[in-house]
Length: 369
Image 1 (cartoon, rainbow, N blue to C red):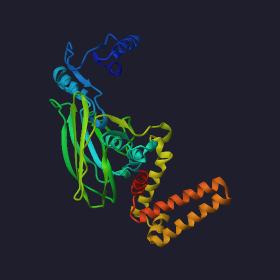
Image 2 (image 1 turned 90 degrees about the vertical axis):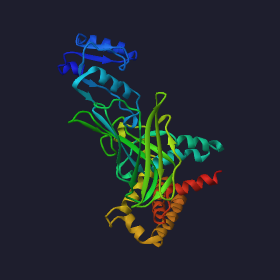
Image 3 (image 1 turned 30 degrees about the vertical axis):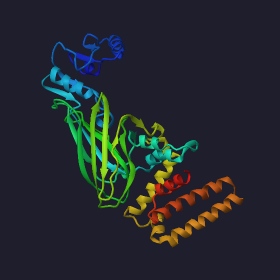
Image 4 (image 1 turned 180 degrees about the horizontal axis):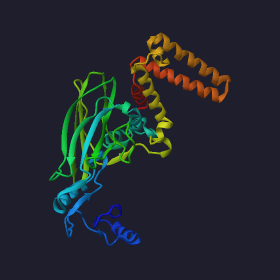
């Protein structure tokens, strides 16, 4: 209908599902059925009465390529678009970067907590072989984004997948928990869609490919990252491996796309869980890291760490004493406040000692076995 409203002389809307019947009724309701013809057929097989000037499709999936409609779009372009015609979108570029995602790791490590007292190790292995839709923050990236693959819808004859390997330089110290994947889509020469972390959020979000185990790295290190995509029996499959000089991960393979974080407009496009529970913990850890790695030297966190274990250790003892005193005589609200102070200073101590939160959670999990 938008093409009709923009002045198109004739429009063919192709839809193989039963919703084509609904679309036909909507065209009649808006009195545009003389211009817009709804064809209930597969785009790869449909025969049009004449070549078209513009082909518009929505074949973008998770990571930019997670849909089997790509083949149908390419075939329709070759058969139905006149020479010099326009294809929208024109191209999609898949992008990746190593990421440190404490929030997602806490989600995946749920299986180590032995729910009900039972062992669920196979469940965690399975969970780490899936691709997830998440919201990635720019500060979670451990190295510069790398373009993996570009598919030209206006030129490609066919698409069978890709497998690309990159050596990625790392820009900061931390733990690489997985690979972030997103895309840039060139709709026309003048109009683009960018789903990179930090860009306005879309319903595609970003994707996350977890590692079986995190890899500790320092600024200046590099990782060899291999990412591939293909179709298997009409299923979108992603493969990924990561290698460092000292360690390598077991390969991952996506068979089902899963969603880690429920999105809410009330949280400005961020996962609801980032405002409560483990999300607040992840945000606090990231804030401490930024205070340490940033250029500013006047932050309280930096002052604590510059003083070494004598300074931040003394604060942990002080806050622990104040927490016990509040619990004994000052009521619930003061106890909560003092507990928050203790947790913050404990995280600073861990940072100062080079201990990651996952080291602590791993130890807790070990004790429950």
